[in-house]
Image 1 (spheres, one colour):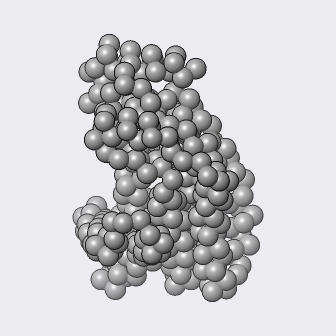
Image 2: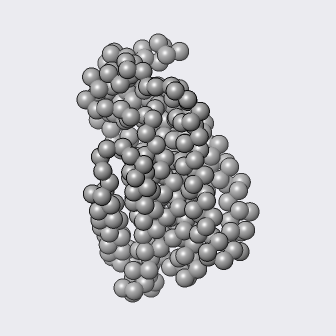
Length: 323
């Protein structure tokens, strides 16, 4: 199967080279940063409940994906094949594709919430193109993408089945217990990846993978690092705890004036970026245990700002309500 998949990737890159540019676009809109921008605009300006659900789902899906990647510890195409051009790069393992999994969960939930067949068709097409982009760019085998779609569907079904009963029980708890549960949930997400890493024992990344990746992309790989897993768990905690505090304070209402929505979003995104990059300056480049703590705090503070800090600021500036 590996040989066949490499031949397929090579054929797409050679015979349909024009796909490279549009596939770069679809790959970008499958990145976590794009989803976070969409979550923010929904939560602050359009549909807070849908924004909340998407934010929680992304954190859960991201944490599970990192654990699955480490558990399977399989390479990306350009790591192992000189015939595959690295039109993109990523330091983590390949299966399952995070782009494919996130696309299935994110757009799947929006399509279910919209309940319109035309949007559902659009969502299916977008999920397919985001997954296909990763194959064309040489950063995933087709099986990575298929596994990502399958994992995303399972995560989405599980989320839909549990969000009602679990949400009602959590909502009945005092705020302190809700924050504690959010923290416990984030630790579970992170510990899944650490447990997967521990299960590998003395296994090491083959030197040929690292050399091939560096030669063809110019970027080193560090697939045994759990930085992405820690970031996902931190975002989940910050967003969930902040949302609980915001609900306790009184949920804000989406305004109808486009100019106010735009002003809200501009303020919120600027501060989010300042928090993210400001914390980034404190994180040392060398891998160490303290890096995981700082990454967790960076993501948690950013998530809490989106779900609680920004709405509170909007209320102070008289931007939280109105028509």
